[in-house]
Length: 331
Ligand code: NAD
Ligand code: MG
Image (tube, rainbow, N blue to C red; front, side):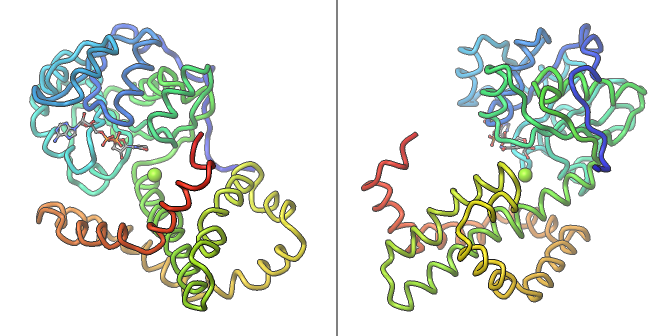
């Protein structure tokens, strides 16, 4: 059926973390969840944050020990790097000489290792445990005795224990409760970037905006266009999430099903497919990574511009007004 290996709680041996201290660097989305879940799983945790970090008080009031990233890494046998990807190379510079042979450098995304922005010492294990979910869900699921699906990869394994350590870490944050898929740094990085660019974040918002603009330019009301092209997307995606495309097709009307099956591929056609292949190639050959790294080094000029333009799109104003009028925005 499936070609990837999937690990569950019984496959993980928690005792490999018994005599180890884990440093969690960063206390944002993933950091706060990993640190608290590890702590409650009985793992010795220290959070690494800059002296002037605004996250310090949060970590302390959650009852965790806090040190600087360097001090935390020095005390630790496993260092989980959960600061933003763009900041990780600088943080690695700061901690690399306190990493000792047999220590484990752990990531939640493969970008910096895969694209050579961090060149880890050969004497340390390099692992990835990447929950397939934002941090607040990793935390909430753990508290509800539920799991969060995740990925496990080993980049280098000088101690021979990297895989077991990664699996034990995945168990301690609650991922093996749901299932952990074996992958590689390359596969995780390239599929993650492609997915967010072509389908999830980029593809979907472009599809929504083009649909909205088509209706509005044809004279339909902005409110109707917003409902049809953006708001209802959630209902469709919920069905896809529950039971795949077929559950969605089964749940909509026959008219919607026939119309969608005959028109969908006309809109997202072979040209879109060719563009997707280009986007994938730019991910694979490092063009995208290079562009993003350069953009950051330059202080993010294009990024800031694109962000502002997206916020100024007409669909944002309509959405704000509609969400204020209707109650569906509240949980
Ligand atoms: P984040 O932006 O939520 O938090 C980063 C934290 O790092 C901040 O809260 C702060 O404590 C610290 N920090 C920020 N700037 C810093 C600096 N200049 N120096 C030192 N510390 C600094 O980050 P995140 O979204 O949790 O991402 C962490 C890692 O997890 C990344 O590798 C990311 O790709 C990965 N990841 C994120 C998600 C997600 O949904 N957010 C999901 C899977 C994997
Ligand atoms: Mg992702």
